[in-house]
Image 1 (cartoon, protein in one colour):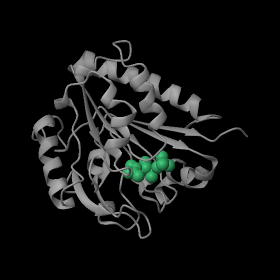
Image 2 (cartoon, helix red, strand yellow):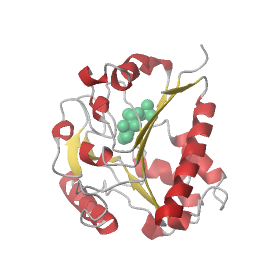
Image 3 (tube, helix red, strand yellow):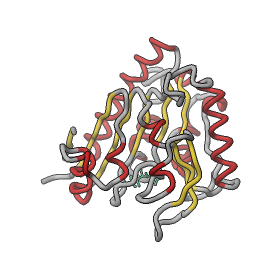
Image 4 (cartoon, protein in one colour):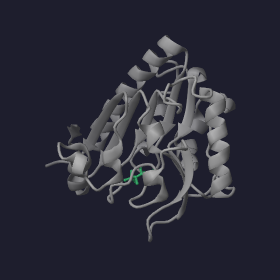
Length: 241
Ligand code: 6PG
């Protein structure tokens, strides 16, 4: 766990880490596969991608952008994770359209999940990239909800126990909208070379300690099950003490 007294400091540190991981991945394998998180915390990071979109950040032509989850809404909807990222940086950088792998929230959740599974298989190959048989992302960005969800893996949802499919249709907890979601599943999250959680706010202290601390084995929250083969980074901006 790396904690910061401001969002700005956390975002700057995350940006540097991502740039380093991207350069290493591109140097070793010629590509950097990045899955974006949704919600509000990563917006400032995405805007930093936009503001540093020249070669000094990384050659976007070698970056493939995916999503960890999506709300089942059209891509121009205010609730769309794709729209947030597209507005924040994707529409402003020179990245080939074929490098942007959007989850299709505008069709039925089941169809959207099935299409995304095929899209990942086309890119990662049929388990060619991993003995586990699941896509192996270079980096998956994740957020942490106050109920301990991550991506769109909510407590007691079908996604929380899914171990066969890399991406599925699921639902947010009652009262959380949009209800219908598409999400990567734990087998994919845990097959990643790197996972970076970005968590903002003092209010998340307790859930954060539960899912990332020494007692995470007994944590009731879904995020505690993120335990990747590669590196797991927890960045927390708790604000001024
Ligand atoms: C989503 C996100 C979700 C988010 C957390 C934290 O689609 O809502 O993927 O998992 O990361 O809810 O959201 P905030 O960053 O807004 O706190």
